[in-house]
Length: 120
Image 1 (cartoon, rainbow, N blue to C red):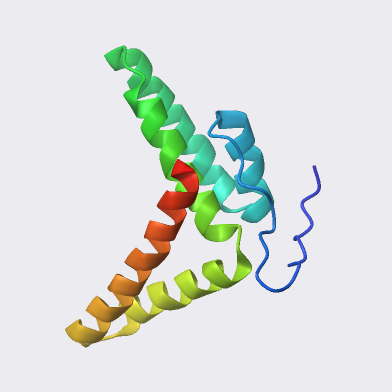
Image 2 (spheres, rainbow, N blue to C red):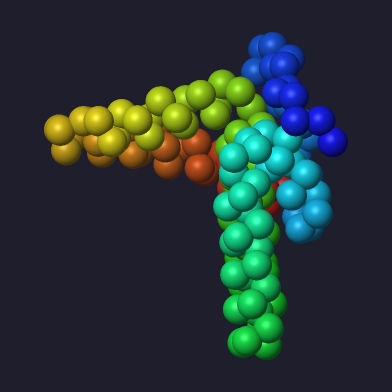
C-alpha cells in the first residue's frame, strides 16, 4: 500500500468509497486517509479486543468499528474534513462561549451526516 497522499478528485467527491464495517477494511481506509491516525486505530483496536476478551462481549468491538467508521465517513470527503478541522480549531481558539456553541453545533451537523453514511 502506498503512503502517498491521495489527490482530491474535485467537487468534493469522496477520496475512497465507504468501506464495510470490518476491522481490516477500516484499517486500510484509516491508513489511506490519515496515516497518523492509524497508530491510534491500532492502539484502540488492541484495547477493544482486550476488553472484549475480558468481558466476553462483542460490544467493545462493535463500538470500536462504529467509531472508526464515523472517522472515515468524516474524512473521506475533503471539504467535510477541512470544515471539521476548521470548526474544531474555532472551538479551541475562541474565548466566547456563544461562538464555541455555534461551532460545536456545526460539528454536530457534520457528525450527523457521517452517522447517516455509516448506517446506510
